[in-house]
Length: 82
Image (tube, rainbow, N blue to C red; front, top):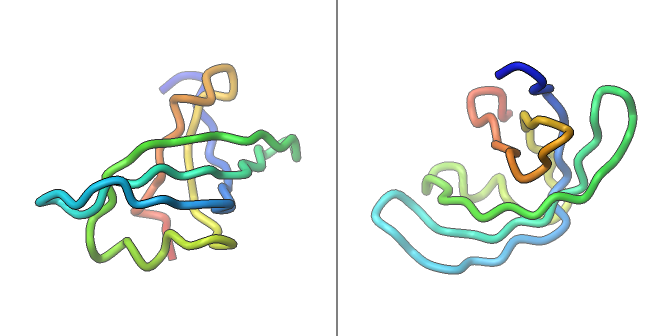
């Protein structure tokens, strides 16, 4: 994952799009703060496991990883989520 950095994403908005066997499908809008302090908005469609669903609410901070040159590469790092 050359070029990838760990960052923090603040949930601005989350919209349920479907219920699936693995959990729920959502569209998320995040304000991501990079280690440099730069901020960028990122939209993400993802399937979230049922146990993690409560963590995805406006104002919640989520640990993420992404390539800053490709914001669409963003992934939530559930192993670092509190």
